[in-house]
Length: 177
Image 1 (cartoon, rainbow, N blue to C red):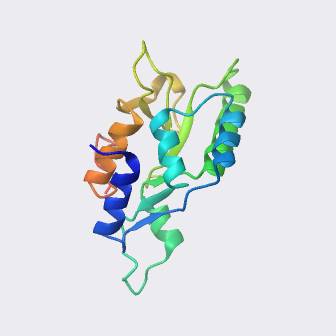
Image 2: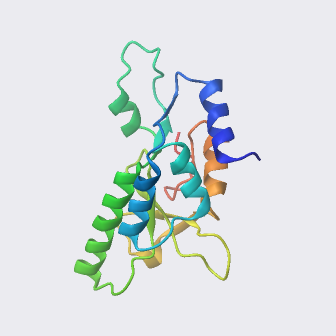
């Protein structure tokens, strides 16, 4: 497949009434997120953020629908987090893990998406030289119980774009449509 910018541009051209991706942030905003996380973002997530500071493909009404509301559409869709939201969710998850489960050391999970079911998707630590897998960080379970949904951010993004915003989640292995 092409680069991430080309893939996202193709979606926006294909259905601009359903694709809502934010303009890119200033480069120092992405760098600031990495500083707050204490590590570099995986290359594909970083490329995505340089192209679009979050966004989503609506799974509900398009912009043309008379009852369309952007906030409601985002809430009911699988939405990529902005740089600020990534940093805020990272800090919230890390503090929760430290407080309630005694987590020590660097928090290795990078949040990047909120599902339409309001679960958080995170990139987990890479295993034996592979890319960081996409995990469903379901709030009812500890990190050791989080399920791998996709082998990488790129695999999730490819599925997301191919399926018009629908993705595989832990909830019964169903597509979030």
